[in-house]
Image 1 (tube, rainbow over the protein chains, first blue to last red):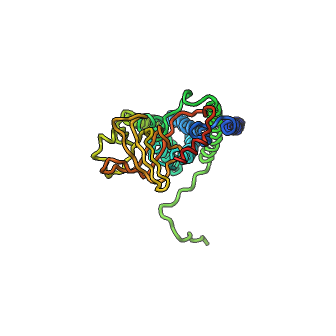
Image 2 (cartoon, one colour; image 1 turned 90 degrees about the vertical axis):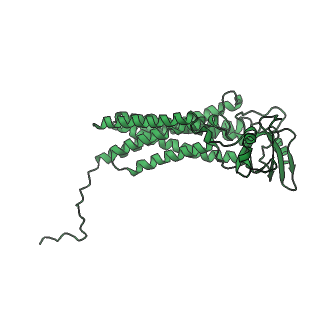
Length: 243
Length: 152
């Protein structure tokens, strides 16, 4: 990657973050002030426009991380290693937000902050397993091993993504089943699509910037001079000065 | 073994692990052991296990079955398999006010235990929301729906 293409990619990343936030602002303005109240939940139902796009983002960003992890193991290229971490981090950010928002939504509608419903349980496991992936990455110093461990752990943790998605179908749950175009009235569908697009753009922007940071870090690490070998036995006294 | 062969072996193994884990779970391998709630019919089938154990029951609040005594903070209602359930309805009692969306015909999940006399004593009443998001029909205001629930 040349200096020029690095700068260009950085500009694109920043632009996507700003664009994503603008699109989200439009979508949320629409959802809060233009869209009608939900017939059963009233104004509380408007959290739909925050929660569903976050869930979409969380699952899709992890899937991109999964593809990048396959790229790491297939090619061994740094760019895949850097983007695996980037996407897993952005996905984990989304999953954390998802759990918090869901809890805030659950209190007034279901009547509880948390319950061990299959959808909630699998989502909590999802956040924790990718948390472990990120922790594991920080624990390994040797670059080759670190990229392999990150990729393998990411692939295994991604198993949870389809499980979270299908959990409301496979098991009895308190969480509602998946909504579709038919189950959401038209005036509510538009803001939902706009906020989902906004989250997607924001996620792509954040992951792009994070990939560049990680790439720089990896390059700096490789360029750094090796530390001198330590002697087998460390002497606690200073070597005698020669006269 | 070259590093690239090693990486690809790792790739194959991790995809295999992930794929088989998903197949087992999707194929119902742990499905039977992961039960969030019983339906009224399942509760009747497992009546021997239900008494005294902490369990969850999920179903629909039957029409004209809700009895809310404000002074005693005592709530009781009947939960059925569907909106109308003649075969396996279960009477539920609970203390305290229900969540705001609680009403007849809505899905609920209650947490508690089955008493000997065939009544479910709930420690927690949770209300299910459907996957439908609808604009209010003309002339109805959601806030008045809340108000009617509070006066139950």
